[in-house]
Length: 116
Image 1 (cartoon, rainbow, N blue to C red):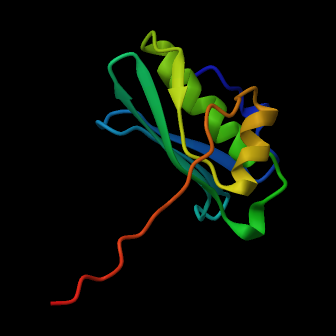
Image 2: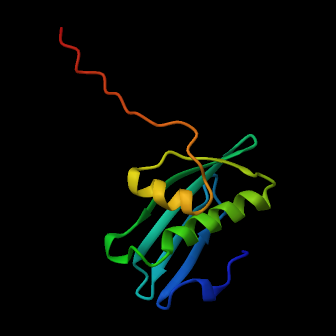
């Protein structure tokens, strides 16, 4: 992995599970509690990043950035340099800080319950 241990704040460890169809990167506390997590799937020439989350008690420590950089390193190791994700409003700030740009706004629509 391209990240060094010094990039993590004290008291955290990086856990990378790259032996699955959907690699998972987690940042764990010294007590092995999950502080942050993210996943990536590779489809053609794209890396699709999903469910990047940081536990509320561990936010503002740079953990989501470390998760994203690690997931991006997994993609680059496979020769994949194009990424896609859907971001929350809070996540948009992180991704823009990491160099991502908005391609299109995202909207969710719900089909109302159909009654007979």
